[in-house]
Amino acid sequence: MHQKIYRPDIDGLRAIAVLAVMAFHAFPNRFPGGFIGVDVFFVISGYLITQIIISSLNAGTFSFSDFYARRIRRIFPALILVLLSTLVFGWFTLFADEYKQLSKHVISGSASVANLVLWSEAGYFDNASYTKPLLHLWSLGVEEQFYLIWPAALILLWRRRVNLSLVAGLIGVASFGASLYLSYHSPIAGFYSPAARMWELMVGCFLAIHQSRSSVTARPLVANMIAIIGAGMLIISMFLTRNTMVFPGWIAILPMGTALMIWAGPGTLVGYMLSMRPLVFIGLISYPLYLWHWPLLSFAQILTGNVLRASVAALLLCAAFILAILTYFLAEKRLRRGGGLFIKTGGLVAALLIVVTGASAVFVTGGADRRALAQAGQFLSDAKSDWSYDATGFDNGAITGIHTLNGLSSASAIFIGDSLMGQFYPRLRMLYAQETPLLTATYISRNHCTPIPNTGRRSGSVACDDYYRAAMKMAQGSDFRRVVLAGSWEGAAAYLQGPQYQPFVNDLRELVLSGKDVVIVLMAPHSSLFDPTVQGATYRNLFKRMHAGPLFIDRAVLEPQDALSSRLLRRIARESGARVVNPYDAICPDNKCPIVFEGKSTHTDDYHMTTSGSAALASFMDDLVRNP
Image 1 (spheres, rainbow, N blue to C red):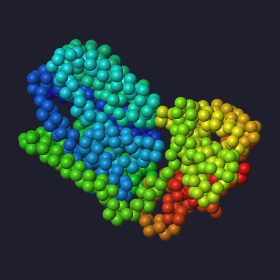
Image 2 (image 1 turned 90 degrees about the vertical axis):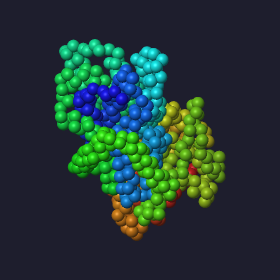
Image 3 (image 1 turned 30 degrees about the vertical axis):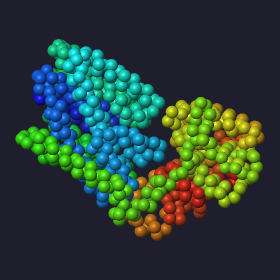
Image 4 (image 1 turned 60 degrees about the horizontal axis):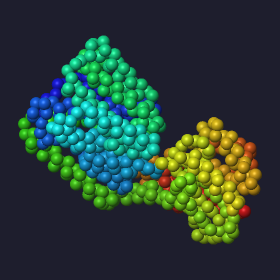
């Protein structure tokens, strides 16, 4: 296969990309935009792969077998080492459900579909990102799917003498359109879908095609200006982008400044800086460095159950550098070059299949559930799955899937909120199974839709403002004597202090004036200490202690964190005529809020109570349906 001309500045760009991603993962508050380093990698990959293929086609030396053998020798050595290491380390450190999830990610990472599997897992109650040591393989999945499709398409177009620049441009524009639509209407799909990410690779492809057809180079002054603009776009994106923003979206255009720096060439001031030896060296080891750094950070957080201190994160990044250097010199370089390339390629494929076989065995045995640690972790696995309330739907302006529990009279209480209202439903379900309260309970909730007007939030494809208006209209029905609101007030405190305040007061006052008893349920106990995943860090070492008796958190420690939202809600209640109920009074007897109650975890994560926890402790709900 024809060899491309080496560009040290591109290795420098790789270094910038991997350092940005590592900084974001290790110090997310200090480098919140570092994740755009992945987008830089996409541009570089599209450019280099297209350049390799076109130069080989021009030389008449292209071979599919040679192309993919090179890809295998490039990708597999570090990937196999990381997959095997995480699988072995997980045996000694992960609970059964965690280990089963890891094995699934090993398999999907090996099959180049990590992004699709992670996409299928994503949801409101998905595990936190740090509990997935192979989460970062999603980007590798996108690239490998590109490697499977683009070479064949490019060669077919080449042989039919189709305008390659036009096709690359059309694909890029179509993918960018899909990216914009999905980013705003289905953000998870917009993030993981190869269709929504292909345009970033096509930017690099288009540049490589253009350069293969034109030998014209810009004047030094123009090239320097273009490189500076490209560098400026990249720098701005790192400081402007936040993981709370819609992404990719429009802002993903900024990291495409990478293409401008590549186009300007290595002879510019920016190119000279990128070609400095330290950056070039980091660029050379960027692939194994990317693969190693996240499992180290992830396992450390799993084991500690806390956000890592900066000093610990820094030490782990140093360890990642050491592992990357060893991987590059002892594995990558030896397997990519030298004699016996056919045997090396076959050996790498066989080695990956062995790893996949081991991961498959872990998966089918439920995370190797015979291990002592796996059996001990069943307590926490049960807690993570102990959630049995389905959020109501929304279709054509109407709420669907409403939950109704029939009482002695036709008079009803309607319960409206987000998932923090949904968490109390098991208590009512248990109550109605044991007795028949006076009021009928009508229960509606929508994840992420805190019952406040005009927030602009979305829950999947549903606009929370539309959902709120439909719920308020429903609450005005004559059968409803009581309207109960609960939600993530702490997370929505900014709305309660903003222009939403008065419309919210007006809506509640209107309900009160129509003769309804309006109840605002304040925040229930919440803390990262309730999260079974965080408990797991202690549980791994203190299993016997966890079963020796309930663990508690003092109410005085927890309640102040909601002081702002509680103060605002009490004021709203006074102005509207509503009343407030404080769940702490019931859930925290003797001012002790239990983490474990009657041998079971009270929470399924840091905010949401388990089915058993809610049924046992949320007794404040009883009076809301027993009394008129």
